[in-house]
Length: 408
Image (cartoon, rainbow, N blue to C red; front, side):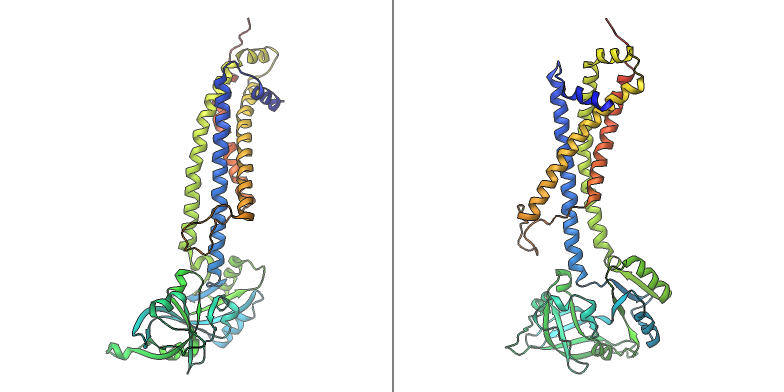
């Protein structure tokens, strides 16, 4: 009943055109703000999904690192116990350290993050699948192969080709627990051959190179059961956070178990902060629209003074009068939010199918804005619009309910 009254008042011709104009301006602003909010969320969801897919090629589901220091020890029985967990699909043993990569042919050098990995690394990480030049061949402890990021290749001027012999490369690594006072004696040098180049994301491409685990451990003087990390791929449909907690309980306090999100928490936190900061700014547009709504409803209350008096004389309570005008405000919010959601959904669907909005710059992996529609964003945007509409309608509705009976 209250909605019917509100709808009749909305459609009815007013004696003052300004009331209609303000009402439709309010609807238009709500529609614009709602569409912008939903589009911002869908675009951020698209970028977040893109970034996560790129980082998932490098970061594994779970990574075990030492709670203190750079390395830890794992016995064969401990490794077997980890492998026997029903939620673990594959694990890879890692020895990681900063190293100086020197190209002897071009006399260039660059500092890299060197990862020594075992044979299982190809099944736990997506780096092998991202190797676009050469082959993912890590060689042996005596003749190690080096798979480098595309940025490392450019900085060091390294040639990787099947038809041309690879450049002579030297890796300079710090020796672990070296007691020699001579800095040069605390470093080791080992020769490697570049076998492949991977490209995932600039952060990894410019800094990482991957080689044989046994080679790195021999160069650094690490013990047989000493490692820097264990990288783990979980079985399909496993909840990463829950499994990380189970593994942490199994490993104990000497080890730290990190999920893919925790391995790069700063990036994900920054993305979420930017997303909600822009959403908050756009919410201010809705609040501005609320002031228009207050004006429109206040003028409508003045317009309908006689109607209010008639309803009161017929026995309508103050609560009933208040509900009519509250519904009037909600109706403006519903129409505006509905139009905005329809507009945003149409643009998102067109973008998904036809890529109508390009992404300029030329340095991105894709040349269009990615979008991803989630139902929870629709609920959030709709709820925000309706709550602001309700708050804006409260004061004029309360004023209408206190209107004195004026019958002449």
